[in-house]
Every structure is written in structure tokens, then in C-alpha cells.
Image 1 (cartoon, rainbow over the protein chains, first blue to last red):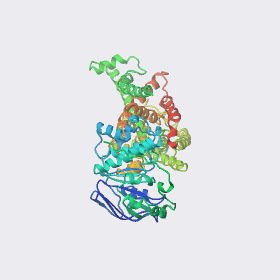
Image 2: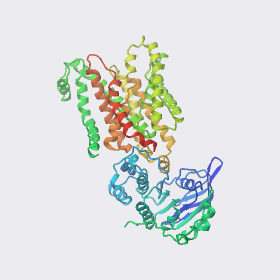
Image 3: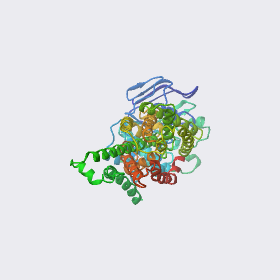
Image 4: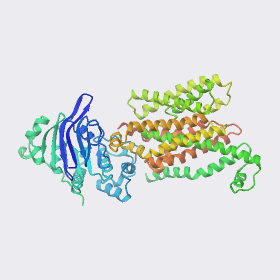
Length: 251
Length: 333
């Protein structure tokens, strides 16, 4: 197993944002965590990458074990893409990619170009982050995670702000990472796209995992209604045709 | 767009290439016009130079070294503060650190302390105290880049007013202190320059050692933490190192404004925003700017010496205005 989470608790003061969550993700697997706002998805991801301490429980990343009171410290293995980038707007895109390789020995020009091309950002490497659109900024942040050649990538809302073309691109990249034995853990509100790129889905609500399994077992009206409180129906039932972007796995 | 990029890069390379020429000109320029460029060339080619001439050149060399020390200290300090505060307008003068250091120096002098270490420690305490006050005031407005600068400028004015009051008390005993208050390397002493240079070098070395970690701060707090950086500790280290460098040169040459803004931006526009590259680049641009400013200070209205801040402000304010117009809006996103 690449990532094992056992009885994890993440606290802010007395409030338990994550309450005894256990999850396992193997090498080359994609786990997507869905759930309403405030369910604890981001807190879980932050504990996974060492931003928040483990209040209780155990997290194991690539064989390294971290326990109650500790923070995960495995930057050589794990990369993080935050939901809301807090990037200095006066930073050049290329510099962001280069400084992101701190602790893993830098990046070759060839690999930098390869990652930039993968994300379709090669055209604005010399632009300032503040001049980019939200979607372009999202692609840059994903690139900063990939230049580290991580074994585990943790992405918080990687598909928000993206147009259809870029959603297809990012979903394809997630699949490509998995094909190359990289573990990917995603938190997303784009529930309808989840089956297109995920191997497993976990549904969180009020800090707990309330359902988990293959996408077809979990992305179901009855499961999601309980959590989101809205009626979810298939497009066939509504007699409309909905279109979704087809993941484009880069060759 | 391409031309604009080239223009900013060109300005940086002009600053780099002109440093040796500025240093030689600085050694050749001064009140004793007989000791000029030919004499300096003679000295550089190991030809005979009369002893009195040599003494004059050494005096100018000391002054030049002092100007370079001011330049590298303020530019590295300004650049580092821009990264840790994620504020493109941050610099020791605008944030009140320089005037705070001056307050420390003047208070020490008022209390009768003239030992170099006492003056430096007093400058550092004043710098860190004033910076803490600026941060406290800005915390009420959410650390917006502009509000931090406004808090800094307001505090700086207030501290400068106190400095003038103290100055009036000590001016009789130390007449040259008035001159010092507006920034000058005209009357520096060898011991002062040595002390200042060594402390500045130590602070810059520390910033250099931590440059890889500082560079990651542009990725944002959370990503930097995920890379294993203890961000709060790092910010504190950098603020202290920047204040140490600033205090070391304020103790010697008084508060000099805008070098900490103009020099880092020349460097950033030239080599990019990777701190590991921008730090060494800003040392060169800082040294060039203050050497040029000191040259103008002694040669524009001879025999009068113009305060350094009068000249560096003329260089720095266009940069400030440019950043306010072009870039500051990004901070609000």
C-alpha cells in the first residue's frame, strides 16, 4: 500500500474536522474523496501532506509511519496541489516550477519543458502568476507538483476553474500518473466526473467516511442524497443527453 | 511586450556591467582633483604613486567600500522582506526598519554610548521594535500589501520625528550627526566600515544558506509547508537577518531610502523571481546603485556633500510608482 490512513483525527481546537477516518490507497491507484462543503476533505488532505498535525491515528506514506502528535514529513514522496493557491502574484511561472523542486535536487530543462507541455502551459512560462486566469493558475499549480516526480500526488479540487479542454487534459494526466505507478488522491466537487478517472471513491460527511468503493458502487443517487441532501438522477431518467469531457491520456 | 522585457533585462545588465567602472570612477573622484583617473590607473598597474595621493585614494576606497556595504545590505534586506511578506513594495526604509534602527542609534548616543557594538545592538533593537509595531498595525487591515506599506510609512514618519527631537538634544555634542540622519558615507571611519561589512556579510551568508527554502515561499504557505519548510520560523529568521543587515549599515551611514526597493526590482526584472538567483543579482544592483548615488552625492554640488537618501529616492520612487500602477492590484486577487 502506498498510503494507509488509520483512525485519523484532525482537530481545530476542540472541533474534529476529520473524525476517525481510515482509508487505503495502493500504488498506481486513484482515490477521489467527495462530500459537501465542510465535510473535512481538505483537512484530511492537509494532514496527509504535513500541513496539519495528526491529532490521533496513524498515517503511513510509502512505508514511513507517522503517529498521533506528529506531522507527516515525506516531501520526497508526496506532492500537494492546494484548492486555493496562495501564490505570490509577482512570481514568474518558470520560477514557480523550478523552486518547487526544493529538496529533490532541482529539475532538468528537458523535464521542465515536458511537464509544461503536458499541462499546456509552455506558452506562458515567463508570465507573472498574477496575470494568469484562475484556470491557467490551476494548471501551473498541478505542474509544480509534477516536477517533483512524486510517488503520491494529493490534489485538492484539480478540476475547478478549468474549461472542458483542460478538464479532459487533467483527468487524462491523472490516469497517466496512475498508469506510471503514481498514487493519486483527489478531493473534488465535480462528482459527475469522478467515475471518468477514479479507481475508488470515498464519500465524506461531517468528518467521517460514510461510503467507499468503486465509483459505480458509490456515485449513486441513494448514497449521495443522504450526504448532499439533494435528489440526484441519471440523465436517462430526465430524458436529456448530458455531455462530459473525455479524459485525454497523454502519450 | 518583448521589447519591454528586453528593456528591464538591459537595465539589469547595465547595472552589473557598470559596477567596475563605477568603483574606478569613485576612486578617481573627489575634492582633490589632482588625484584623478590617471593616478588610479597608475596604482592599478602597480606604478609609483606618491604617498599623499595613495592616502587620498585609500580614503576614497574606504568610502566606496562603505557605499557598497550599504548597497548590498539594503538590497538583500529589501529582497528578502519582499519574499517573506509576499509584498513587492517591502523594503527596510518604507517599512520603518531603517528609521527604527536610527532611533536605536540616536537613543544610544543620547545615553552616552559610543562603542560600536552598543550602537549596533541599539540599532537592531530599534529596527525589530519598529518592524513589530508596523506588523501589529497592519494586522488590523489583513496584511494587504498597500496597508503594510502605509503602516510602515506612517510609523516611519512618527519615528523620524522622534529622531529629530533626539537629534536636537545631541547635535551640540556630535555636529555631524545631522548629516548622518539623511544617509551619508562621506565621513565613515575604518572601524565602522569593517564592523558594518562583517555583520552585513554574516547576515547575507545566512540568507544565502536559507535561499532555497526562502524561494519556496512564492508557492504559498501551504505548499511550502508540504515541502517540509517550517514557514513561521523561516520568516522570523529572514526578518531578523534583514534587520541585522539594515541595522549594521544604518549604524554606519544612517537611514538610506529606496535602495531596498529599486535594487531588488532591477535584479528581479533581470534574472527572474527565483530567490536563489535574485539574491546574488540584487547584491550587484545594490552595490551599483549606492556607488553611483555616492558619486553623485560628492560631485553634483562640490564641495557640498548631498545626503544619499536625496539621490536614492530619485532612483527609487519611479520603481515604487511603477509597481503601484502595474502590479499591486494582483495582491487583491
